[in-house]
Length: 391
View 1 (cartoon, rainbow, N blue to C red):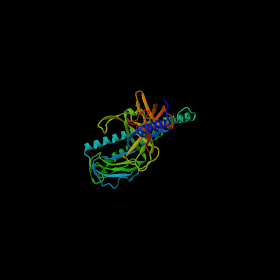
View 2 (cartoon, rainbow, N blue to C red):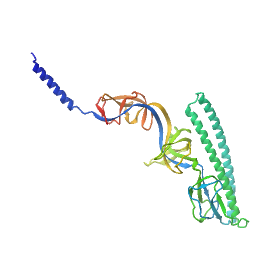
View 3 (spheres, rainbow, N blue to C red):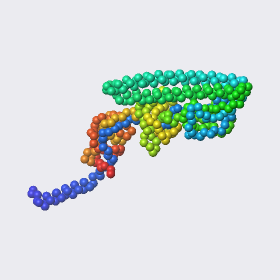
View 4 (tube, one colour):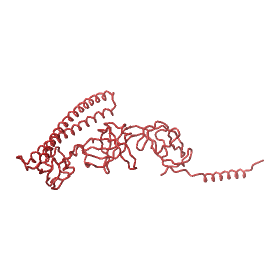
């Protein structure tokens, strides 16, 4: 049978029409969010809430019962060592109370001796940390020690030095408490020459008034808190983390402290407390948590005692890491995969992942730098399906 020219044209036209209809009726490309696989910095962090606190502080209490004068100090005022923070007129002591006061004097003397012993112990730890720092510097220069371990040795010396400062402050506080207790016996002795002499309650440390517990003239009993004095320059941050995460945190690790409206403040872990405690979460679940103490690398302004902050403990950091957004991962039976976009088509590619950061994940294999992957793919995304990037 001979096909004429008009029949050929008719067949071609019909095929073209069918093709156009099929083209128009095929599903439109699925609009998806696309991100590239990049090489850059990746951090593995622990994100927790934290509180600032003044490390060197002392709560000064009334050494004996009596009437305290109206206080002229206010929160924020500066106080020198030995500065008067309150004036107390002690009540006369009966024989029994006097015996108790003498016992308090003996206890205060024992606390002074204990504080001095702690200074000697911290001094030994500081000397050992300094020797370790010298060795770490030498080994790091020879290339036999990672920089991270050298930095931890440096941070440990800094932490020991500040612990020594705190121990010395405790000695001063104990010595001042002993002096105030002895003065109380003189002022409250009804038969002594110093009867009726007011007791001047002095600050054992130099700093600022953090809290004023008793501002007005009134009668107080022995042990009533009067003033809290602290050194704002000794500010530190404390954050409680889950006990199962505490094993990954070590002294010397870097952490960042964030508050609204300012750049992150750099600090280092100075102590991980050895005992956990139970804390109820916002969801009502009891959790075992551990306190992590951080020391700021430089004096901090704009923060005070008891300020709420956000804390990021940097467990690991890499500079040239192949990374992909964690939201691009989809689970497989034996691992993970991503949807790579090639010429408008989604291709599911198995990948091998490493460390996980806050937003990105380390890629150990599967895709190359620069590849485009779908972020947050839903159930509509299929291997081989047509996709189009959202604007």
